Image 1 (spheres, rainbow, N blue to C red):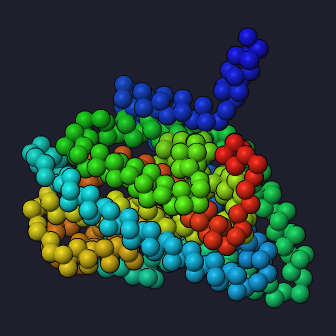
Image 2 (image 1 turned 90 degrees about the horizontal axis):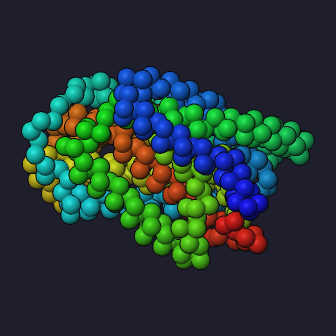
Image 3 (image 1 turned 180 degrees about the horizontal axis):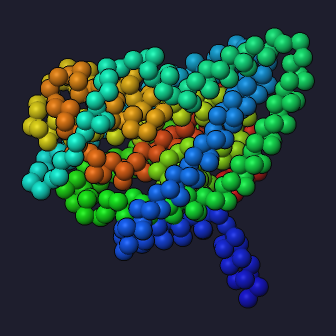
Length: 405
């Protein structure tokens, strides 16, 4: 009896339990009372905005402390180069998988009758040509990354380096402690986001584009369990154990459709499971801009989907061009809300064959596929940190690596 009471207490005081309950309640409210469900948008948005306040300081502090803690700038450069090479290889592979899956399953070969076309001009009226300056100026995460890297390198040459590091370390503890209390609001954020999504778009929206959504989820599932799982298996880590270890964070990502609220917890858990603090501090924040596996799969699949809708035949060379363009433009697709449509518009404009107006077909279900993108991106960045830590021989196996939660 006492064991049952203990288990019940442990369950009901677990944040994961309440996030899951909140997601279910949000779905029910959105489905049975859409009007009030849509009003909950402010709750989900407020939680995400509150967490985003911490993203800049956390990225800055972890990267600066990571670089300054290494001391050896050659090591910083080596880890940075390894990370970028890994990011490019894996995301390019993800782009290719998206194209292959779209051609095999052909989600665009559907009956177009009954589809309500919304005006996509608000997403594409802006400049559709890719610009590195616009990319940098609109991506706050990337700006913080650059400033933090420069500051960390300069700090290594500062006479009072140890004093500054001590101050930054104390600030880091304060920031993480404050964030810990904010995360208690995660169930509210998940509830608001799910209630709005279901209330706004409804389940019926998925009918005409259901095949695309199912294809995206299946493809990303295969990518996570086969590709990322294979990478972890090489380092003798089970992907199922890894996912279970991050279950609380994954539920937050699922509920909010964003991987940013779970960024600090991901970094903390990677360190607890054995990854070097300095490697995590460099790889994970950088990966949030450059290692977007789920986004890459979605973008390449979306282009092929639109080509199929308009019955446009793409040559092998044009497919390679699409992958090449997305290799660059997809790196900023998570930086700004709606930027995924700008990336797609840039690609469609460049190949001059698929009507840009076709983006309107994606508006109805894009929100529902954002969960899959965010979860895949999140897991991919966790795997990246493990790979680089192992490769640098800076992974210390704890006694119970997957039982720390």
